[in-house]
Image (cartoon, rainbow, N blue to C red):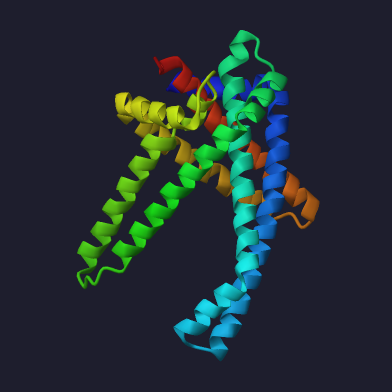
Length: 261
């Protein structure tokens, strides 16, 4: 695990050109996120104003029906953002796995583009899992329990279960998808089998990655709040996203390639 972390950091330092595709993808994702947030704020503001005028369930249903185009637009932005992250995630995983075998940036990009169908299938699977988890989560949130400790315990246990299932299913799905002749179904199965065999190591690695994400995000916020120039904010935000994506996926890809059968 330590070797994978060191190798991922070393790969970023020694091969910085491989980060350029991720940087441009991150820049596109930042712009998409800005459009998404702006539309979300507009929709929320309109909903608040509408709710003040008509305070019943039918009015709320009518409002969201009326805003179907806006909601579809936001959903499209979210899917486009997720697809870009997965596409260039496969690219960098492929590059990290093949770099020792003279793999090139162009070959890794070509492989990722050829895997677009599998990436879409993986994205759909992840979306279904997320919707199912949120739906079940609402069920537990709405439980009529008046014991605060019991209520909190149930929610906490549910969140832990969802986290473990998500880790088992998807943590190594991108590195598995970056292999030759793989597909979304095989990638998910391989991620499940790999995390079963290396459960505690995978859990520790997931926690390390989460800590790294929070640390880099906190550092990014300290820098970004001092900058007023929009272009500089977008560029710096993309740089931090590039560091996050490259390091996390590099660690996962290298660790997976060294321990997978």
